[in-house]
Amino acid sequence: MPSIKKAILLNKADSVATALSQIQKGDVVDIIYNNETVNRLIALDDIEIYHKIAVVPIQSGNNVYKYGEVIGKAIKSIEIGQCVHIDNIESVRGKR
Image 1 (cartoon, rainbow, N blue to C red):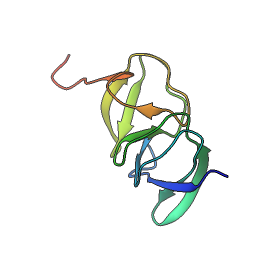
Image 2 (image 1 turned 60 degrees about the vertical axis):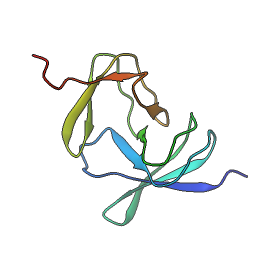
Image 3 (image 1 turned 120 degrees about the horizontal axis):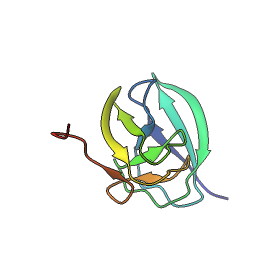
């Protein structure tokens, strides 16, 4: 049986949470906000500690939110439970 891992949601508006430990594909992940579990999902990828996991579907071209702020734009569609990293988002810092 897969283990239950945790990821922290920093702002209710965020589309990603931060993994609090190494997550393996198939692990159950509790999404924690204000010390409460607000969601539970299945990891679709291996996710390194402190990397991002999608908590909502993100369509290609849409903004990605962390800290309640835009941290990038999806360059391909991202499913709930997928790792969110440089292979599927790009920075929008300094771009107009």
